[in-house]
Picture (cartoon, rainbow, N blue to C red):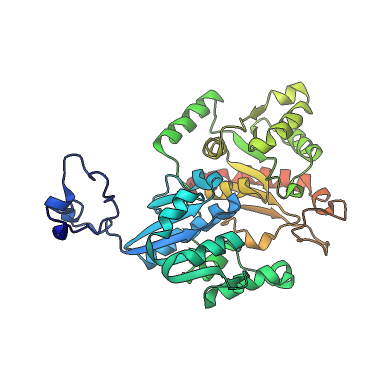
Length: 393
């Protein structure tokens, strides 16, 4: 085949490195996918999403994917994120290629041409990278010549203003984070949910874990997501509050309690467990905290209810369509959509909340005032409604 005769297929599966199908020559015999009459293989609109920071925010941003595919049904979606967030996006049916925030992947993306760039991160490095991407249309945030973050399009102004106007962010805004990111990217908002899917191997792992803990569908499985990232440690309830909640819940024979968390919560969960009487300890299912995001999601999937602060664990529970009971203090509760599956505990009478401060000058009143009995009451209320919510999942 002469050089001039080479025609690269407009197919998202063709890499130029090896055959798409063993023994088949796409250049010589034509695109095999095209012969099926299905156009899902076509590149169409080439789209890059930049969503790097905060695991919960990366998961929330997956809510745009259905809207994006509705607007651009024939498209190829690329997503770049931090290495720590890669597991969140794996096995996602809407994303064609996932890139890690490292030199090799950024170099690859810098040599590509995109129709659309979507950057929802208001960080200097994300915006600087957005500036360098070769894209016809850019949405979200970029840098100006002075190195300041600015909106890239008209519909990103509301989101941009929230970052620099505390009155709007803390008092006036009634839009969820999902609605805001849809607006930022010029997408129609239909209250689409997060996208997180288990692989066949993970589904098998979950079933085996159910067998291991002698899962009984007649019981109510309550996951206590006890921690959060170390960036905002004041989102956590105290160990004493968790112990008090467990002691209250342990009075009901049909309640089974799972301690959930990530690697940063290992010591904390151990302290909670050791603070309980031996007979109550025997009723607690202590899940591993050091097996990574995907395994943590598998343990959480066993639960009917997840009790949590505003953390990645909360967003994961929302993605898994669990009944979520979430407490809030320093973060903005209006930005969280539980999709009609759960309850929010919001501090009342505190002028300082929300605040997003890493250090509290008021002895963490918003955490101290969390009503443990109200959480227990919500759980007991759910126990009566379980058949309704089980039928939705």
